[in-house]
Amino acid sequence: MRKSMKSALAFMTAVGVAGAMAGCTSGGGGSDGGNGNGGGGGGEALTIWTLEGEPNRMAIANEFGEQFTEETGIEVEFVATDENQLPTLMTSAAAAGELPDVVAAAGLSPIRILSANGLVNTDAHAQVVENLGEDTFAPAALELTQEDGEQVAVPIDAFPILVFYRTDLFEAAGLEPPTTYEAVLAAAEALHSDDVAGIITADGPIYQTMQNFELVALANGCEMVDDAGEIVIDSPQCVEAFDFYGTLVRDYSVPGAHDSTTTREIYSAGDAAMTFWASYYLDELAGLIADLPTTCDECQENPAYLAENSGVLTSFQGPSASEPTSVGEVTSFVITSDADVEASTQFVEYFMSDAYVNGWLAQAPEGKFPARPGNQEDPEQYLNEWRELETGVDTRAPLSDFYEVDVIDGLLEAADGFERWGFKQGQGPLLGGAVAELPIANAIASMKNGELTAEEAAQQAAEELRAIQGTLQ
View 1 (tube, rainbow, N blue to C red):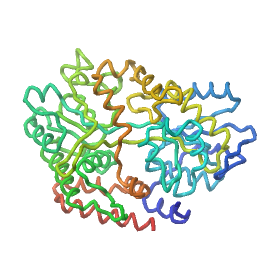
View 2 (cartoon, rainbow, N blue to C red; view 1 turned 90 degrees about the horizontal axis):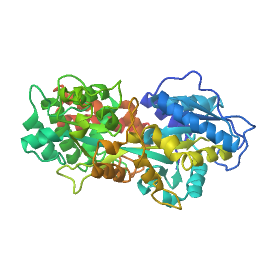
View 3 (cartoon, one colour; view 1 turned 90 degrees about the vertical axis):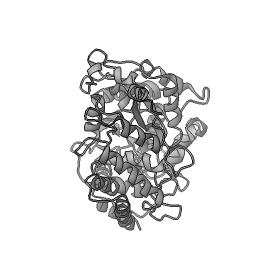
View 4 (cartoon, helix red, strand yellow; view 1 turned 45 degrees about the vertical axis):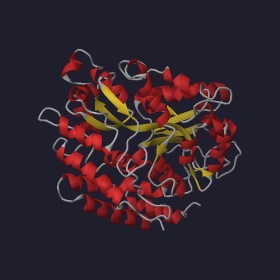
């Protein structure tokens, strides 16, 4: 059941999501809003806010948007939008009666905030899923985009958080792959030196720190909240996870606070033996993006050296867990509460079928693994077509040119088995608050600086999460 608008708006104020975007005011304003399934938009263009705002991705989206217009007569306008500002932008647009018709590539956390505000059309989403065939979607993706029996979004793609490690360094030192806490610590200790850090991973008060820690935590059976809705980030399993992560960033990393830019640069320079990173790093590591080059000594002659000498793990396990865990993000189409429902439904179905591979997944194959593996005629059509897609920006090539078949297969399989904090316990909005306030990342940053022990970090994070949870009551 959705929370009241008053409660949801109080939550957004509490988490401090702020900002506005000029030029995002041409909402669809269809005549059949709410949860109806009718159509009719008075001939106005569909407005699509897309969180894939990079120029090359926008170009592909616009190309296939034009094809959609040619086939249906429905005009489409894509507007690049900042995901960090999405909840506030949507609330402002709703107050002005100027919501977009569709939001494209929305992550799980902001979707729950939009749903709590009553800004999504769950009936339209359910209709799309039914029209395309529920059994054509990855079950895990559907589960993560449902709440209280309602379809709060239409899952379109997914990307995993991965463990990258230098196979050449591991083999030379006789080390096992870093599949467990124990193996990671052993490798970090053995390989850490003045020239190469044992590991580089985000450790500042930023979202990437929380994202990477979620992998480490869930790998050890550490949940943020239990089935009763109680905060349990201070459980023994979580303290163990904080201790593990704190040891890595304090003893075997590089001095200073690190974010997505510095972690990438350090591993791409060959200056770290391991890193945690999203799959979006795969093309950069292969030397396919001139603005984000690999700079290791060997990379001067072979820009793909690090890709060819890096292992890629899609799952990970801590000592308190019974099996390995995969963590990642599912992104979705959201049809809004004021959308031109009939036209918006046609648009989403088009980009989930005719334009799915070349118009959507092709924008960034390394970070867009199909949440819909196939269709009713061929259950694996889109998976097989994805394998042939080229990735990169300045140089284009399929991932299979650089990574082994078992790595590619593992990436595809991981996208259908993600674990995430809060969602299976019905606490998705809480994760949204945690992303905005970053209590976990703040605690980790304090651990690295020596200000908190693992127990204190877990307790501090728990107290702040309980305060956030209080705003949702």
